[in-house]
Image: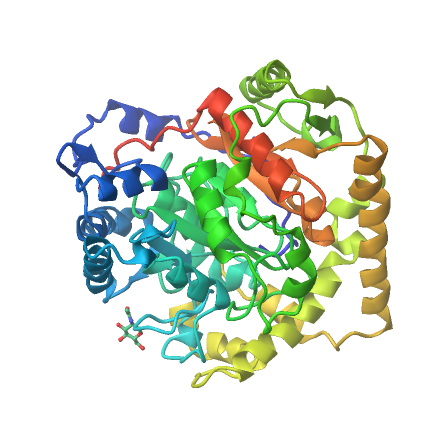
Length: 522
Ligand SMILES: *[C@@H]1O[C@H](CO)[C@@H](O)[C@H](O)[C@H]1NC(C)=O
């Protein structure tokens, strides 16, 4: 998500009591649990699905049929999916044949597993890649995004395209809204914010409309919807995952990562998508961070032992209003200690107010400038497209206002970007300032205190991570008094995914907070 509206805090929620009462009084009808040979697909992890394949209790066709059925049943309400892949069942049959024939490919981690990818990630198949906008409908991409190629190589079935805040919120619109799908909804409390911009990815895995999903983040777009939809999101170090074929906001901050129901599932997906891509030079530099043997080895139940975790209370915990949420985090600190972590409390990040204000830090100006340059380059590179530049997109939105806009939803983010004038002196100054804020801020704190991670609530830490290209992981941490989920975020320095995974997995295994959403009423 673009940063002009800072990520909403976990306490920023209107009263939804009536909604909740309606939901909780409904019986559990309407949620069919498809199982074959007694195997229940709903809430199954990738490892459980793989075991069921192996034991002949499940086929990829049954799995895809289940998810297509759930999308059919739920998506008119939740709007997490924009398109399904017309070839999904065919691909499932192919996976089943490969498994039957004991093809070496069928042993790969994601073989036969259906994945939903955010609609700003290019797929060269029968589906459209539009970032949620009609302006890109009918465009033809030159090739699969690198991460999609990697998923297919790992055996995954591209099930469909997830909805998003249009243009990954570069447009600046309400969270979860795009013209092509309408407003994505939070499956826990339908009238609550689903956050964004990877709203559809988070909504869909939360509601079991897909096994796993991919999102993208520029500033909060994986961490925030993961927090609000009670799922796990990994925002990788910038460059760890290639941005080739992904509708961009800024190459300095954009990153592609998994959104899944468990840390382990997210790690399986992360393992599949990292790697060097000659079309994204940041991947060369970041490839030094990829551990030999991949990330699965860091799924250790004792992962919290000896980890030094920093707590920056001001402003991240001091802004929380709801006493229940405050108590939940105090309880989590206790659990982290019990699991062997050392908590270093009451820390401060230098210039945190400036870091969190994009107008002061320069993040806003730099992002607007990059958006125009990077998006123009992406649009020029399409084989066929109704729009070839940011200016064309703005014109399209004006011309087809009935389709693309409502009275409330303008395109201020795009207009601001169009007004920029390349990397001029002012932008250079902003870029230098962002580097300095990270160096004197998170970088210095982590080194001085010898921290492995900083712990914060929800996605409020996203901007600190965004401007430095740092990684973070969200894990479900509770539900507020209205039933709206909130997460806990573990953030660290570049390339520290192994430690963050150990910490996130240790926390998840010690708490097991995620529960599936209540039955959806139509
Ligand atoms: C892609 O968009 C075209 C319209 O340009 C539409 O006819 C087609 O059904 C879309 N593809 C899918 C898989 O929905």
